[in-house]
Image (cartoon, rainbow, N blue to C red; front, side):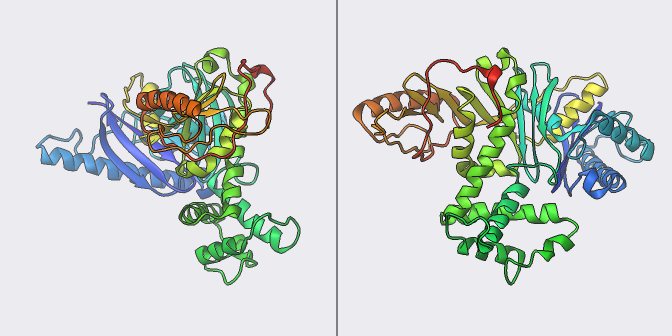
Length: 427
């Protein structure tokens, strides 16, 4: 039985999986940050080797329980191939060098090694055979357009926090902190009260006041440390809505949408005609309820039909699938995604997560004020709005499942005719 290992390496944490020829998981290990640009190649390799050994130990334990004899004298099954999908691997040259250097450093760990950027692992995990976009927003952010053969057509972002990472956890935290400092300086006055934002930031970082920015300049892991604020901001505004924080998440949604829009001019009609599949990866999408309005209002100006899919499995599985291909094996992964959000423009409005929204009339009066429920069915408004929304929402919600009805008070209006994708530009 051949074994394949895959590694998902991010700037905050990592995961490693070992699967067999049938695609079944044999071992799974969580690990620390694995961005070679941040921690160095040598440390990156050391962590990967330790994770592999821990995973192999899990397999040995399983075999001992079932009285199966291990394959080698040390009780550890050798890997046929290893896939490394890591943040920090930007160019093909970077990836080739990383895989080659790992084999030179640890020649007995695996017979084959292949490296790629973190988005590739997500791509192979997704099973999106029609093509689409992988959109990553964790500590950092980037996007990749791919075709039905998993060939990368174009990239946007992935340049790290110094030159990008818009819409990421780091960006959200940095934006919130800068909003507070700019407001204090009377440089860029916030529209909203920032006193609660100040309390949240100081409490999280254990600062006596927000002016102690030297703390971040002295911290070597500033990206991960600052990014940790993003989750706290989400939890705080979810518990008690704060307009200053909500505005940051709204803008983050816009930034992430722009990473999709930037790729559209290079997308062919086959990818777009049935609705663009967007595979969403990273912890920031756990905050989707606050990203949604900014994201949708920006992307819907350029696309009339799109779906956001969340991975149900780690991108390490896709890295293992890539590793298997390196050794001329094809792994089958099942049940890897679930629907996060579905959007479709119609002649009378649009469908969002199984709920129908009417276009705002020319006189500015909306005849249907909507409020979503957990199954995307409930709608309050005029009798016609209720009938249309209930019928369409019920049908779409039951077909797709896993939908979250959301409260929306502001939505863009749409023309019913198709848009010209060739002329798309960044918002």
